[in-house]
Length: 100
Image (cartoon, rainbow, N blue to C red; front, top):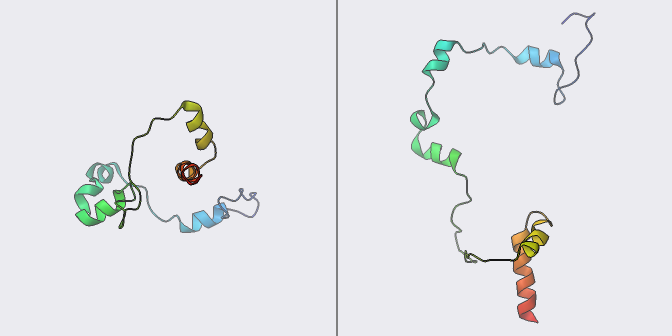
């Protein structure tokens, strides 16, 4: 970039010049792209499973039970509208009702 060219806006706090300084990776050729293999074929199985696991996994000491429960749509909408943790808030509301 020459001194006469205006600087581009910052990208995530870095200038275009910063990106140009570190972008020394050449583009992959068509041959290289054709030779790529899926991660499941090249990574050790344990690493692949760890990187692709989508759930939290089983609780070490399960304290709650998984149930299927039918709720009225407006009740469900009310709790979901309160954001993340809505299931815990349903649990708290039921616990409060049990207590009294």
